[in-house]
Image: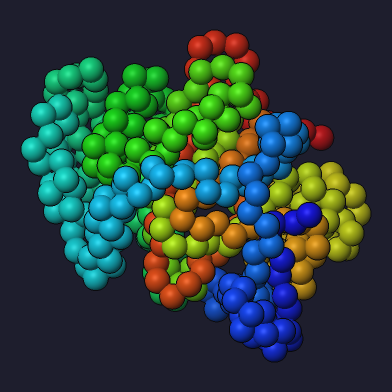
Length: 364
């Protein structure tokens, strides 16, 4: 049984009737593209065998309510981060925000900032170095504030924590120690990280799915605003086994499924003759026709709904997005819900301690 469904825009009266009965039914809209009305259906945690089967099939693992009471313990920090994003949207300085959070930290010191970038979405990057403590000597630890889209109708923002020289692929050259250092930097700057780091059910499930020690790194804070979100993409990066996305405040709708299943739906939709060609189309970033179909077409959103690829995340929910290989990963699209910006944390999942890692390569 699917976790949520999308009602067609033509069913506005039906959506209103469900709302009158106390069901939450919300308009699904991103950057003025209306895809229907989304309605949650079920919110049960999967059994471990079901979660493992989904993970192994590169399908999303939806974990409603898994953060539990840990969310309440972080309520003040969550409110502070929501207020910070609002100040940034109004033109506030990211450096000032981090100074107020990190200025008295005994181990991490300010090492510079930059507002210059080749990406027009970037707002400001702030660099740190570890001067004392466990990670003393680590340099080029940074947090970067940016807009999610280069579109004035979408006021969604994000803050990414990473290490390296700031180049898009700089983090790939970072040592394990540097990665752990920037993870600690993120924890100190944004204490609500504890809601995920200290969630025993989530950590236990991840340990079982992965089968060996792991770390949650490349941490990103998302502040998805009304009419905003992220278009379809994947996170199959070298050495990264997946992503753990946790909703801390507000709601987001997700269209997500394995890349291979998405390709098969595209074949049935007439976008390609077979799965291989559909995958090739997904890999071509310049395929504007396909981009319009999967991101802005109401009929295609209905097809994804019919295949059980729709989820609604509320505060306290997490979703795992596996990426075992370039073609064996969960593609996903995020759409903000509600009339206020939300808050979520997204962490990359990285294996530790030798043995094989995910091989992110194209398969014929």
